[in-house]
Image 1 (cartoon, rainbow, N blue to C red):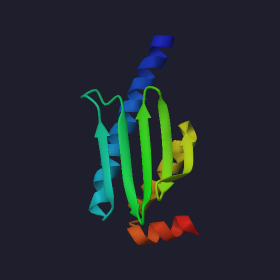
Image 2: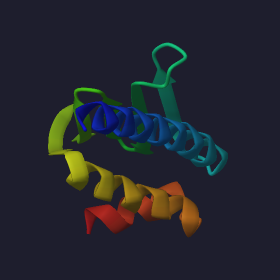
Image 3: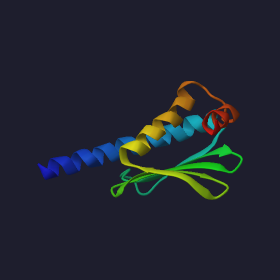
Length: 112
């Protein structure tokens, strides 16, 4: 049972890393400064970052050790989420892509 769960977790992390890579690419095409870095070819971890302008930065990290979402402004941490909450917040960011929201519009939406 535990070996099966470990393999499912590895596949989940790989799927999440591939989704982050795709999200970074699409966000860049929509005018955001975004990146997704991975370590090694196994897609076992990633660091995703996107700038929303005016020193507003989102960082999403996924690895075998966990998943975190950190939102910063002016180098100060505004919000830090882990696990399922972090993934839910990532979905909100993915909606930017889905609904073609421009960078300035997204920033206004999350600050009000």
